[in-house]
Image (tube, rainbow, N blue to C red; front, top):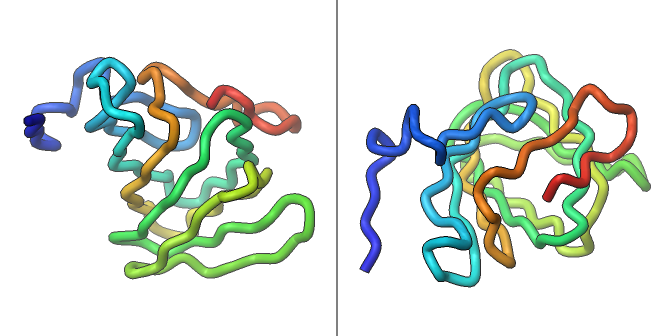
Length: 129
């Protein structure tokens, strides 16, 4: 059984600055489970062009407001508490946090190694994951 508290992750190597926020990684590959679970903060006012070529990601918003936009089709969806979205086709996408931080609970399949970050300064899709 694995039991972790957020307060025990903050400030450790599982508290990762991913580019435009922080990813607190409750479960990673080293935990020997097939998926990862993160508590992710997306910094207010940020726009991140992301693409997970090696993972399927599902996110559930627990606070804040933002948007997710498909980079290929420009289809955009509001993200507010209670909203779930899945990048089920390795979709390149923009993750946009509006005037307040966006907080998401995320699942990645397969599991993250744990040290992945994004290059959000690049105009290319981030492919670190």
